[in-house]
Length: 158
Image 1: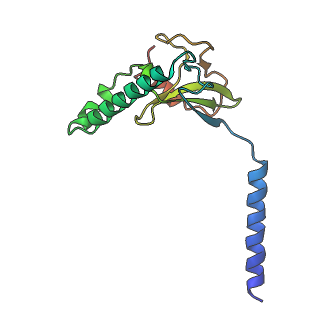
Image 2: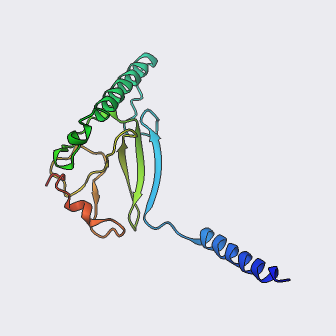
Image 3: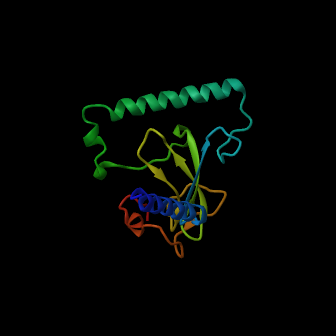
């Protein structure tokens, strides 16, 4: 009979956990991964032939192989020291677009996701050297759950 109180406690904890999970609300983050050649992608090139798509995939694969070779070289740690990083945008080298909901209230933005690299970025205001965007850039004023430390990065173009 000594096991009965333990069973009740375990069942109570399970019930509380299940109730919390079914009634919790998102608190500042959502994620949807979209392949770059998907019709849902803002970079979708809808007018390509099958041959052109295959040629693009070959080009992406070669770019990935070059990147892996560079980052696995013996001096890769000195090449990628934070003081030596210079961010450039090569739109053709990304495999996925990610639609992310950031902050509270949720603001949805598209990110370029390079699954083999360490950088994921989005444009935000203020931005001096931005690429053209169909939608306005994210404004961080009034959005909670965003680390302001990232806005102080020396790599931002201000």
